[in-house]
Amino acid sequence: MGKQYDLIVLGTGSAGTIAAEKCKKEGWSVAIIDDRPFGGTCSQRGCDPKKVLVSAGELIDWNERMIGLGIEGELEIYWSDLMAFKRTFTTSIPEDTEDKFKELGFDMFHGNPYFESENEIRIGDEVLTGKYILIATGARPAKIGMDGEEHLAKSADFLELDELPERIVFVGGGFISFEFAHLAARAGADVHILHRSDTPLKQFDQDLVKFLLKRSEELGIKVHLNVEVERIVKDGEAFIVKGKKDGEVWETDYVVHGAGRAPSLDLNLEAGNVERDERGVRVNDYLQSISNPYVYAAGDVASTDGPPLTPVAATESHIVAKNMINGNTLKVEHPVVPSVVFTMPKLAAVGMSEQEAQESGLDIEVKFKEVTDRFTYRHTNEAYAAYKVIIDKKNSIILGAHLLSGEADELINHFAMAIRFKVPIVELKKMNFAYPTAASEIAYMV
Image (cartoon, rainbow, N blue to C red):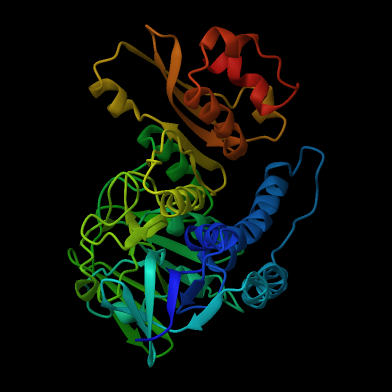
């Protein structure tokens, strides 16, 4: 038998490290394992570096909107310089994370972990035994199942490009494709998005998505709907992307996987008696495996109702820690989680969709309006700004909010708080927000 630990953590992102630190503070022995550089996805190859790059695109977008309105002169993105700036945020993370873990007293292991039994993990030639095992391995690009799938670049690859290709095709119409497409177009690339249905960004309000599609096309992004990719063929330095019907063909320099992510669970779960479904490890209300009491799961890899977002992973890690330390006393819940697509303009949502509200049986009111004439958007010359707010008429509270504008990412948080705490609309209207700010428009929106 190998070394024994109170807790073995698989993964070094938010879902794993928060619980690991809390258990260590209780005097537990902790081992932590990752097959990638320590520090997790969000900080190194996800949310944070993406936001650094997108911010440059937003500056270009803002500048172009104001040409002739007091601003003259064009700006240009120098990709290599922008990427160098991005790396100032990411390069030191693995070493900094390992230094932190060493200071905390974790035993660290690099490599691919596999279950040897219900409470044993094999890593290389070693077998570790854990009182508890926390699976927090996150998500990876989903398998599409097409010929030539190996030619697809991952989002992490895109975020490490030293030079931006002249022609880029994104396969799939989700977050990754639209965010990177808007950035790449702003940096001068010829961009196509191929989506297999007529509803890209399907988890967002489709009335607002239609506005975003118009803006995307104005920026030179070609969005092709109802296109299912059959295969990708390498042709010299280029790639040929072929659709399944009508002889559709796109020649490009770079093809990016934007067709969703799936739980990263290549862990020999059968040997650990860990049941899973398509959303991840099957867990009870306490985030404990329903089939193996030694195992808990948190973040993108846990099969819960929580969306695959970093704040959700962090919340679940806190819950797991308390349940492992104190026994199963704290149930997981995800009452309100806002979500944002960092395009230009941004698209945001929180709470019920219009369809969910209509199917709820509640007496609802839907307020949907374009607001480019409002001062908040006129003074930056935004061509696309709109909102949809869904109200429970009987209780006079907000059920859902859906926003499209340059201010949507911050504004959606006000709606999230109002929904979470069931703030009466009359109280929202009484609130004096700083003026002129986007939040000062809320009274008109409800």
